[in-house]
Amino acid sequence: MIKPDKLRFGTAGIPISTRKPSTIEGIKRVRELGLDAMEIEFVRGVNLKPEMAKKIKYVARENDVLLTAHAPYYINLNAREKAKVEASKKRILDSARRLYDAGGYSVVFHAGYYLKQEPKIVYERIKNEIKDIVRILQDEGIRLWVRPELTGKPTQFGNLRELIKLSQDIEMVLPAIDFAHAHAREKGKCNTVEEWREMLSLIEQELGREALNNMHIHISGINYGEKGEKNHLNLQESDLKWEDLLRILKEFKVKGVVISESPNIEGDAILMKKKYREIRI
Image (tube, rainbow, N blue to C red):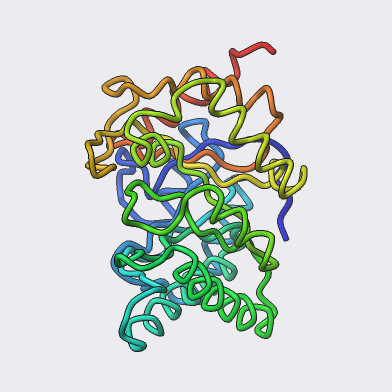
């Protein structure tokens, strides 16, 4: 397992300003921008070939850019149809395999939906499917962090306590903490230093210091309503108190990656890194 040396900042996908967009050129652009992480976005499918992934690994190491990946969005480990569950597992497995080939660190995914079922039953179903995913990866000699994400709508599985419990029940699993999603899921809460301290304290208390030394974080502005998340916004167009959030991350000495999911991905990643470096605790 890769152990992050610090808190790194990067983009969700290839920076918009990349002249000839490709993953390799995106990594080089990330470095040019003074950033040091990038999330490979397998949004509609995993179409990266193993040979190309190995080239990406070389370029990422050469440029000191830590890679993560976001598995495709068409995932529901609680689907009623077995075929949909199996297809979801394959998408997560393929994302993890290609990220591992690319020398990456952590693969994130939205685990599923409650579908109006009892949350405890949904938890058990999703837990068993993720256990199977981890077993397959271990059998293949693949070791990286498998990250169910804190989701932005109450209809989606993945509140903080569910993710912590999964991390306790399954090895190689830690939460992906999307602070914008937490803010939207709770309809405007999760936006104060007290609430963020409580979240990080709970993670440390239940999962140990290792979890804070290996964080996979998403931050962006977000538009939300009664049903939770609507769409992502640029930080300065939103009500997220992101500067206070960065202060709390520094206070807790968090290591890992902060991925900007704002529409202006590199602009906000640069903004956050600059602000983070200015903070004195």
